Length: 600
Image 1 (cartoon, rainbow, N blue to C red):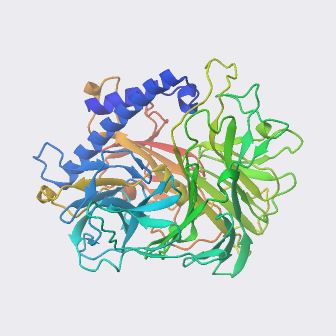
Image 2 (spheres, rainbow, N blue to C red):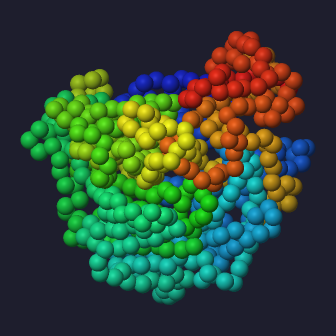
Image 3 (cartoon, rainbow, N blue to C red):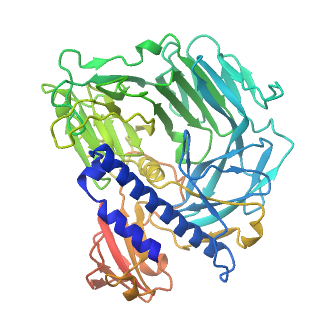
């Protein structure tokens, strides 16, 4: 309780517009980063303690699991590899079931993974590679990436056991690369479980159950998407460029482009020395274009059935602007050009903090800095037939330069002071990793809910877009159990709820209610639940890929069995509120929040 109170107090103190926007001096930013890092580690300790408490004997006080937080290219938690004998606990914190690809590191590629039903799950072994300054991709012999698919029920902890297998080649990915080499060990050997094959000349094609992607042989970027269901070929052209910053009124706060040369081809020095690498396996197929250390662009398809992931195109951009003053006065962006007729001037739909969606018309008569809008979770463009949705894992700027286009601001380096109080430029030399999902969806002309869509009637994302956005915002929680303490885990699966929430209702928060300023006045039998009705458009068909309740009405006893009384209260839970027995669509409307005070 002490760590929880401390973490909440720290988060409350950091709710400053300069902290949230990142417009701080370098010294203050280090202080903020230290506070955030300490708070994150405290939250990890709380999670470790609670996961241990749920899965072992209640008399045991010390946690036996360790939180594992990993992003490709960035280790956030302590480095940890898995080996045969270890166990992995996966916690789905969402209120709906979740299909996810879990990624872990290992030193032993011959691994199989079994679930709580003692059945083998699909596993893929990918190489760990690094770009060498000699313009060569070096594949590690010491570490491997283990990927496996999981389907976790809502608010459920599930156990997976790591076992050894002799059939390594069945799960290893095939590598297609021209300038790749296996790193040598101390003995000079170069044995590797992977097979490296050359990339044939011409455009590159990747396939999944839903899509066929075509990449330009000269740039290595996506240019065409073919939908296998309809055999429709759609132009989707991706490119990276940069706005050139002005010498005045451009800095940490302000975006001001150079009117003489507003756009620069930042990849021009690397276009003749770029490298391509393709990894294909039973779970994913990915294509990576390497433009030196500046940009590693990856497009990934998921080879899974009956999951919203199968309809998504995953894009990852690793950007390293090198040490300042290299690549100075640049605003790096990624553009996605389609044939969608979203108007001239073009119209973009953006979200406002993920709670509602607003159309923005680009004013082509004004400069680009007047047309950049903030997007928190997703943005989309559409016409009467189709829609392109771009889902992001963090807030960033979005705009368009012409019809059918979305431009996403990725990274920036501006060394000038804009005179807004910071008294320094923006010269961060650290790399960044940008993750996006792309959805290409067609409007249904046979919908019984609405007529043929138009730009004025459709203001909601699709069901798949909401699903993928929640997956980005709330990562799967992974906990590793060392093989020496696996006996402490007594349960293979622990569901925290027994109910099924409606498809468009999202559990935003569920916590113990502190009835007062200090934790001494808290009531252990009082909880505070915040629900968000994330409505989705009915004009885009979706398969029942996620098990959820299609009835928009909610029975209190179905989602909160055993509760004594439930009151509808204000957001903070300070009002007594009105007593509820059921929730209908009239009292809990689309895009609204509902706070429940629960007495058990």
